[in-house]
Amino acid sequence: MIESHGMRMTSAYYTRLGQQERERIHRASLEVLERVGVDVHDERAREVLVGGGAQADGIRVRIPEYMVARALSLTPKRMTLYDRNGDVAMRAWGYNTYYGGGSDCLNVLDHRTGQRRRPTLKDVEEAARVMDALPEISFVMSLFLPEDVDQRIYDRYQMATMLNHTTKPIVFVSPDFEGCAAAVEMCEAVAGGADAFQRRPFATCYINVTSGLVANAEALQKCMYLAEKGLPMLYIPLNAGGVNAPTTTAGCMATMNAGTLLGVVLAQLVRPGTPVAVPGWNGGPYNLKTMVGNYVLADEQGVPTEMGKYYDLPVFGLGGCTDAKVLDQQCAAEVSLSLFTALLHGANIVHDVGFMDAGLQGSLQLQVIANDLIGWLRAATAGVLVNDETLALDVVDELGPTGDYLSHPHTLRHFKEPFYSKLADKGTYSQWVERGATTMEARAAQQVDAILESHTPAPLPADVQREIENIVQREQAWIDSRK
Image (cartoon, rainbow, N blue to C red):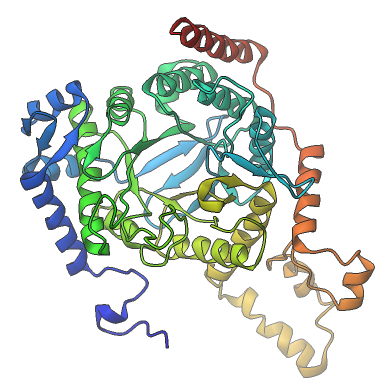
């Protein structure tokens, strides 16, 4: 039995947490920040926090409640991302949900061969072009970690490739602070300067933080750098319940949330009004049976997003992924469920569409399948327009019970409005056989090929391309000099 919509929180609405539960987690996070503190592995970050009223004991920093309250009052409730042309592409607030890819998969499930292999920079390019073409994918991430470039600065090559092969917003990831600065420099070259990029940012950094109670130096440096520039950021500490945090969902969430609040405080101390998005996944028990970092687990669904809604901050969520290794039944179920739950609990920027095998494998086929599923979800959750035209009472009066509705002008006006899948086979068995008796997996591969054959995003101006290439080459020379 699945009991829902009862009056007790043990029979929860799909909000997972009621107001009382959210407030208790918030108060618990405040107590963790004041009594336990967070290990802050950057001297300048500690200085900024202490200057704002925190106390430091070595690397351990404790933050009083008033600092959190002040920071939350200063953090924007909205995050707006633009496309490369300067048009609004994502209004990330409230219950607006946008889907996009993920980054840095170590393997490709090759749609041409069906085999798993290591990715190259060409795969990053093809992923960017596919995501650029898919109508339900709103932002682009690199998807793959290319092995044919210098692994010390692979992210610079990823960023240059994405900027050259999509006009959609970009979420980038960098393993070090220098990579974050180089990515921003490339974006400023595309935008026509730092001020232009700050006014209409078309890229944002996903800052990976070690855990709720451990803030690594690179994450803190990126946070302060982006805040100084007035750029939006995704500040994401992630806990593993039972490994580096309590195994209970509430305890895991409280400690993860404490680390999130530290990032919000730090950003607002550096520059009040800096947009910060908070986590929309993890915060629940780790899979202690396998000790594998799974991407689709039931217990955590919606919980971190609830805290983002409590603070009325943008939420960086996760969906459209699976821990399956092939495009099988597990894959279909987990991708569908994770897309749906991300939408139901209102995550705003939902990444990792196309991820497989606990984030170790990416699939362009899965991205086009997920794109189709997102279209279905859009139609299934859309409001129904009820007016004289849609009620069509005059048409019913005219045609009655046995009239020809198929050829009526009212049908011709509206028949294209419903959702029609581009991948699911909705015909008869004989029609399916006549069309080649293909599986959805095969049809998805065909769609990927069709996109790659026909879709080429508008190129950057030649001088901007050269400037981006010069930045990458400068970074290559810099890293080579450190040998």
